[in-house]
Length: 288
Image (cartoon, rainbow, N blue to C red):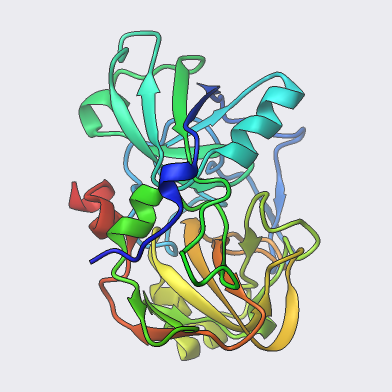
């Protein structure tokens, strides 16, 4: 049974974005960790064959964003799109050949990421308008307000089998633990905005830790990481994250981890289970 929250007190508000065109900075090359430079697709646009639930590693791509990426050309509206949209929010296509199609918000990177069924994806065009029914900012578990929720919709929290251990502690399913030492780009950003990349350049270490088996949509835990204000090391703190984009060839970059829950004290426990993926919990992506 889902834990009680303050969802009844939250408002639902519309925010809008447009399907984005992939962009490359001249001359298009990405610096590879081995010293070479490559030209790779990955960020923005409509991706047809990478979905939530697929592997985060192994694609011939850089920072691949599963599904559909949207943005708003107005800066203030873009910030509202980023800060108000939450994982699990409903998205509606309001223009173009796919008008009326519905999807689910699955991540926040440089763009907001949305999973649509194949029949909607196939009809989407760059520039089509997507409206998100944004709800979740300010969401909290009743009696566990010391555990802060970020980017979480009530839909997502109701779908994840989170358990109350006692009056202070919750237990969350995750696919794996990520040691703080492999957390890379994104530590400088506030944890309400965009993700933090893993540093995946050491492939032997990734295999040793099992991180190379990470899937898009996986829930993960970062022990000793406090994401209340920014992202940083704090002994005893616990952060639960979500893998939202794929691997990168750049130094200091790799699959992106979006902050979902954080506690500055050891009051989040976790249980490792391979099923801890939002594609399964929300019946989207590869599990649709």
